[in-house]
Length: 389
Image (cartoon, rainbow, N blue to C red; front, top):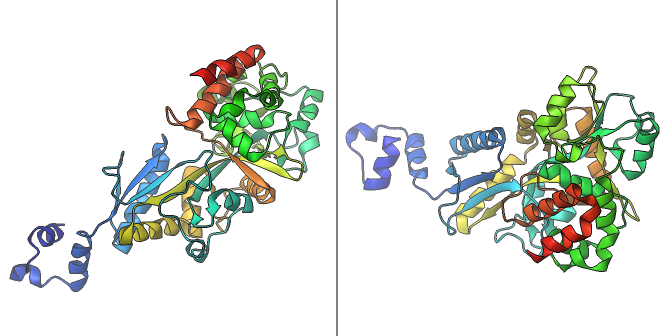
């Protein structure tokens, strides 16, 4: 460490004691003077931050490129690797430094076609999916006979639950759960551009056509298929109930549900939303991208590509419980395989930001949905009032 400091500050030959250091050590010292990149991981999960930072340290140690984890970027002019949960974006507002299709492919990265359609533009990958999460239903094996041979769950399946007198317990007070519940409603949604405008807070929310998708969502607030009080519960509340009472069916995200153990285990079925041709799948994507230019940005991209390797994807997935975005990586379990198969078959994905930042479009959307679920009979007033703010 002192060697590198001396080289950086002095820039001249060292005394004879230092002259005997090996060429490898000298090279390592010089590399520490070179421009590096800042790394910011926008998540409240200490474990997720820790694991990505650990891999960054390993990359720096083996590749010689400095990557510094920070809480906030020091300068907009710095090269930065930013990793965080994604929401609705336009393919035309890609990052200044997209990753080329050829480099991503050469890294051995293979993922769902629907993921590619979401993240790829003509210029390349505006961001690359690093980890992802599915949303759906967890149930004891064989509990819902009508779903035994399937790996997906959708609105029409609620009939079998009602017939069997089964109810879903969900942390409806959680931001991500509220967003996913929007895709459980029985509604015919508008085209992609109009829907994106609604998600991002456009005028589409208050147009007459909005009734077609907000009214069915509001109806979920009083739907008997959900346990009473579900829409005010947070994840710790549901975890306590699931462990202390006999709760059969839970609704939430795969990574969270996987951690709530039950004798005999649980089967997980991914939530999907029927389209005229195929289905859309609600997912959370932890995406990564690079801002900056020049050689340091190119080297920062190499770090992202390194994270996409099957080996690193397997390690990240195993340590955090989220799903590997590189489908060449090994699955965590059969439920993870079922979620992956569902993603492969999807014609489209719709993104859910489980940790929206205050003031962001995702936070506004989650707040609106929370307001509707809190007063489902007054949903039109809630939508109108939120749009005026």
